[in-house]
Length: 170
Image 1: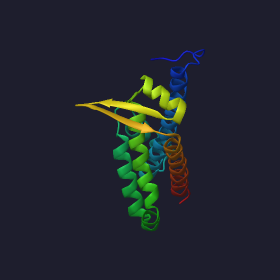
Image 2: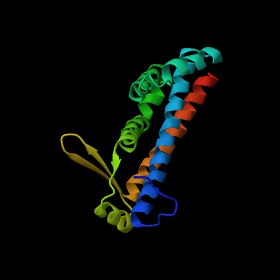
Image 3: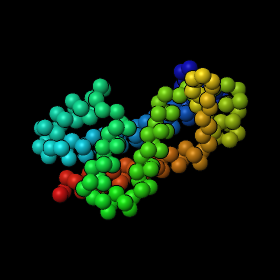
Image 4: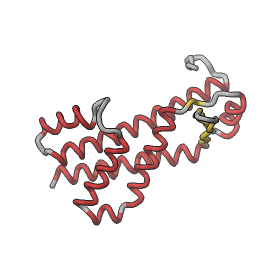
């Protein structure tokens, strides 16, 4: 279902708001992934040309290393090279895992647009996503949960950016 700019119905508002949250969350996680890519590339070669090649061919390529694997490598390198940071920033690493999990829901689950979902969105400012495997699975987000995801993305972006800057400066 695609939203038209003139659709101000309950379904239209749900689609518009869900698209805004979905787009913002996915954009934030893509940025986090690029920062991790940059960290990994710089770690393995601080030569700009080779680092760019490494990122383009391995880390940021469509057929390259999946984000989950990159974060595992990122964590291992930080643990190896800065055990104090690693041990004192458990929240950061847990939030990265949480953010990746949420990214997968926002990227792959279908937005629930049935009448109850529209009513819940209008009355409770909530959004629900659906996944179909053997049975239907619903993942419900109220405004507080959505804001928590955004907060965790902003937090992980800030810390990951600082970790990358520290690596570049050393």
